[in-house]
Image (cartoon, rainbow, N blue to C red):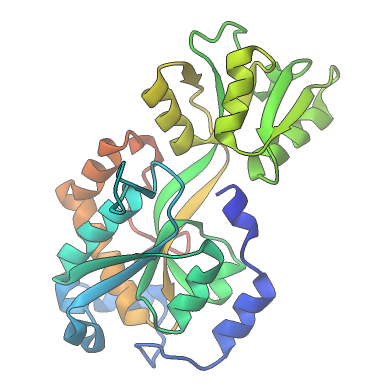
Length: 294
């Protein structure tokens, strides 16, 4: 993800991962061992007893990144890809679904302290974060180029941005994509920096910029909602986003992975992505820490 990639402090995560806490599982198994043990069982069968006794799956997210997590207009009800997928997973586990909105940089510490069971919040599955948590990957996303409807400049790739005015959001991975490309350009881009994606799009509307780069699911949402933009199909610096689970809670990790397997098999996973127009961001099969769960 863009800004959220930079909010986690790696050292703090490592310390938290090594410190004691209120984990719901005291044993650790590799993802491969968990997958082998799950053979012939349902996701509901795999729910650890400590979680089963509570009767609920406590999910945390950080609202404000549509279409992934957002409030329904005029309400405090969370909706989007992540809340909907969390509810579908809870149903497969036979648990009541509850979701809490929290600051993004507090999600992993809250997970490890036992405030919630899983985090579902457009969180990039990175090696640094894996020092503290395991991920069941559910989404693959990178930056996509957005242009005015009809693509009047005929832009097809990053190379076509050379010599043109481009607007990119401050402090994001998409700004980094543009800056790396600019180093390759003979005719340099004019790069303007916006506070966020929506204000960047105002520069496209006014003609001050001919393109921007926005995380693909967000770009698709803005294009669909406004009818004013085209999103080019290629994604740059694409990587997986994962459901984060405390590294000690390997039983719950495997139950969630099995739930994902079941949702992929019965179409429930695709239905959630289709609802928000992000089916192109689906992961192939069940992935744990970017690797096939097998």
